[in-house]
Length: 263
Length: 308
Image 1 (cartoon, rainbow over the protein chains, first blue to last red):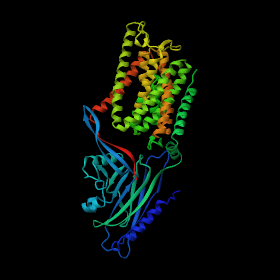
Image 2: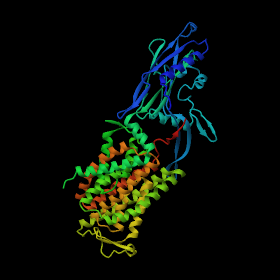
Image 3: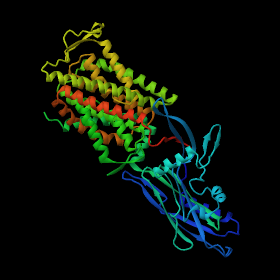
Image 4: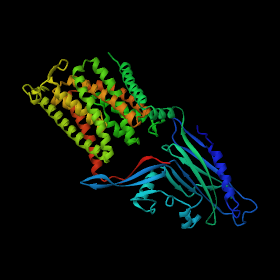
């Protein structure tokens, strides 16, 4: 039996631990919350938008110069292995030839900021803090090695482009809005075909091009009721499920021939 | 109205799926084919994963062909003896096909093989059927009596042993080619994920010389049994049958099939063959174009499994 700790509690604990871990020189603290920690997939689910809001808490030790804050929010969905294949013309027909394996990459990835990443931090910091789709680590099997490649690599850019076309990867550098100098919010759009699982939200606070503090929270997307029942039965009792489906097919066919009987 | 599919993991418009089911059901009822070769590409086009589409379509074809088979049974348009002999080969063929499918999958490039066999099979069968239908219509126009069983055409098939009298079809035929045909259809159906009716019907008409009155109903019995078998196999091996998707398809499919079966009885045989030939040819050409024309996107992504 697994004891389920609510993501809110996890988020709070993480936020507190991060706050204590951060050196005294940067005494800001981030307090964040997501509008819904448990998105349920129901029969009429067709996508949803969550809202993340939070504030920057300062205390006496906060340097006076810290006023212009920048914020980067990274949302990453459950991880999965994927293969990107490239077609090539051979003997007049297009066939899959080369392929690249992406290992444990997020099935959903969204990066939001209050202004362009170039304005927030130097390229070096952007790379280290994985700001932007070009800098996020996407592990690939390249020959015998496991590594990420340069952003303009054909397979990597095709991968990011295809995921973006399905709205599963996105980057928006004007999505985070500061309501007051310390109070912020951002929307997290979840498309209809969003994968089921746990989503990690990482919030990083920058000031003058340097990371000040960070915190994490999470939410989960779950199937409930009938959907979950069907999915579980299919996985655990394949034979019974197949029998029921086949029987359902025969019943439907038989009913139709009764309903539409003319003679 | 949007509905979330539990296995396919995507929301779909119920009315769109219903309409697709009804359209394919109409075609399948009219020609006595399962319609899998139309349904599977349509589902993939709406965004359903190919594996889920193939697995769920099998149960849809089962429902469609069962309601069709019942109405053909009432019209006494099914030859039970012929159906049983076909089935004995069909079951073995399906099992062999599933085994081959699994072997090919582990070797890779299965998608290409499926696409190629679709092109070859659909274009050949479609073109032959279209040509034959056209010739029959021309003969009828010229006033020559159209006879399915040309007298004196006792080919090598009629020289085979183990002859059996199929009363309802009024034919006297060796069981060897019938079992063999069932085996081939079961095999092709399992490998390509189709019912196989569109290949079975011409073979029965041209090779076995089964009269048109019993050909559709009898082939439906074979399709029904092999597809029920396929549904079970898919559910047990890959857990990819989406019962919700299948149910929507079935409801649309059986409704369409009823109207299709009635329309089919009104249209003359040679016209029916001409139309079906055109339809099959069109799907075959579509697959061919996809292989030859440079795709919009050279890259594709496929999920290969979850990770920690």
